[in-house]
Amino acid sequence: MNSFRPSSFLSPTQIYLGISSHEMLNDIIACWHIRHLLFLCDPGVATSEIRSCIEKILKGNQVSFDMFTEIEPEPSSKTVEKAYEIYRANQATALLALGGGSTMDTAKAVGILATNGGRIHDYEGIDKFMRPPLPLIAIPTTAGTGSEVSYSCVITDTERDIKMSIRSATLNRAKVAILDPLALSSLPHHVAAHAAMDAFVHALESYVSLNANPITDAMNMHAIELIALNIRPFVSNRNNLEAGLSMLCGATLAAMGFSETGLGNIHCMARLVGAFFHVPHGLSNAVCLPYGAEFNLMANPEKFARVALAMGERVQGLAPLEAGRRAVEAIKQLNQDLGIPKRLREIGVAKGMLPEMARIAFESNYNRWNPRYTTQQDFEVLFEQAF
Ligand SMILES: [Fe+2]
Image (cartoon, rainbow, N blue to C red):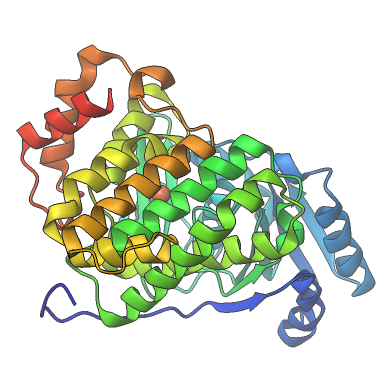
């Protein structure tokens, strides 16, 4: 354990998992007495087989539904308002989200408005709404963000051009998450790779966080193992259902972990790369990962040694620091195998912005649980190395 500070663990989402587990919808509909729901569907899976299967289940159970598919990456408050208008017209009693983080976050925001009223802007911050949202059934179609079990949703306020984070550990979670690898089969190769690397970074940063505890350690260690062993077969073939299920479980475990521990330098850097240069979140994280990992290694070599072992590296007989270095090397190899660019310059980052990004990274304090204390100058060096 990294520290002796009091910590906790909460994960109130019921999780169904397995190949064809989407069929559990039949039981949920009966148990919740659902007659009408709002179905939010990622446009990327609008023509997929999983969507047809789900509609068939809804119709078979005489459940009527409104469909909302106009969801963009990094969803805006305008998108939330459009979906909320559809909810208001027919007053669904539950929400169903089939998609990645953007779809699940939009659904969470609609659920909050449905029971609390007002605008989503009213609830920016921590515990700003009091009434439990409309119950949400989340079926992730990427193995990445883990929004199905995390307690936040991120909505872009286009008027102020900022991202609003709406958080509540007790209220802002999906009531049910269904991890079915059949939902991953239509993922494009690069989206699968970027989302998977996001999940890996969640597990790694949460595992070495100063806020980690034995419960999050167990989850993150297994998440790292599941992801490291399955990421290549899964990205190579999204119809490999066993690899897909392992990836979904790894991503969900990692999100349960980081919901308690927070993240670190890698996400801190990647958030700025995404904000300034509109690079997909998973890709920004993947490019920053080797540099952030190398920087953190000496803060906790023992944990990095265990990461190396979980990634399948031979570390027997090595001193912790040397074994930990194998984890950093394994991460570089993983990036190379997945075709992740090595440098920020290759994904459109401008060198002139690096000092400003380092300043914001330092001042945001987003990395407060990072295992190695990081100065503004450290961030400058990290961005320079990654550039
Ligand atoms: Fe992330």
